[in-house]
Length: 126
Image (tube, rainbow, N blue to C red):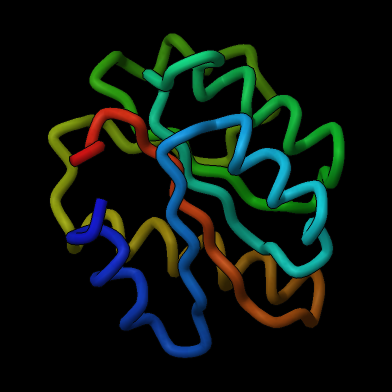
């Protein structure tokens, strides 16, 4: 997770929060929902999967952009309006940064807000 966090932290104006547990990340989001512009989530998480997490995030704040990271194909998210972008593993850092910048740019055009990014990923636990 630190490799992704380090890469995303280099995006100007971005604050990155990392979580390895979806319920903790969701609780943090609930308390700070208006400060977030983007949520990245792995599909495979403990307790709840990434799709469930992103559905809950969108139910709380539908304007938050979301990116799902997964080793599965995009058919998994075909009928889900909770995912704004999809990255298939293995993920290259430049592809991750590009996807994040696109979503941040879109969000900032829609809402003139500061930038916060959160990344949850139970698969990269130390």
